[in-house]
Length: 321
DNA sequence: GCGTCCAGGTCTACC
DNA sequence: GGTAGACCTGGACGC
Image (cartoon, rainbow, N blue to C red; front, side, top):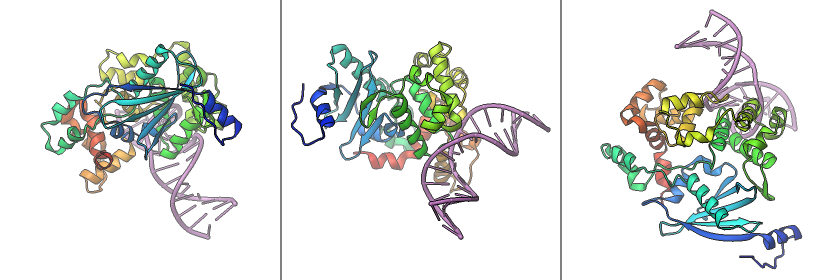
């Protein structure tokens, strides 16, 4: 559908509107899936090239297709359970392109993840009955493991404002341009072609810069296949050892990457979680990690997710429709 | 406006 | 195996 718009915008904007194509699709969501709770409940949804509109309850994502073109997806959920996805592109898209976008959206929203075993396990814990009631437990992940790892490294030893700044500049400086203010996330090749000096000066990723460039270069050289982790047959402890092989990835970051791979065996404790746990369960006193570990041990392979929900309970319930 | 302090995880060297 | 110090940015705060 080509839009014909007569607008007061400057020429460059008007040309953009006249040239972009729009496609609308719907995606069947799993039973009880709450799109906005999932999108707003995850910090990932505000890290470029994701963005959200609180008023419209909309998630945006700029993405680079396998063939190289850049599109922007606008994702919402109306009253029905179906998700609506509007895809904007400056090139004509065919069925294969749209199928690719649909698949990426499914990956980002973890639509393929079955949480019913998790909800069944929680049935024995009345203090967590709210989790299944509101359909909590899902979050946003990136289209690639590479992007998830890069962003996780950008969260380490950084305030949230700094993390947001680093990821935004990564897209602006190294990604592909979709419009004046939206860019795709750089591919491993794009990041590998950068330098530590450029990253320090332009992305302001500081001492993380050599780690990020090295990660991308190892992937490009074929020394490291992080995408294979999605379907790895390794047990979580062995997979975690592999993740820890990336420079810049320590205990917290490795646990977080595993969570994004759908494995919740580890806690991914950061300073905010420790503080929240202390407020909720320790009357503000400092609590050793071993004690937190012990607290969630009964939840076994789900303990990381239970901790995450436990410390975010108020926020999640307040975001529920 | 400037300087100082602090928060935020990981790495490396050292014991 | 455990610990101390360095790494870097941006926000808060005091002057």
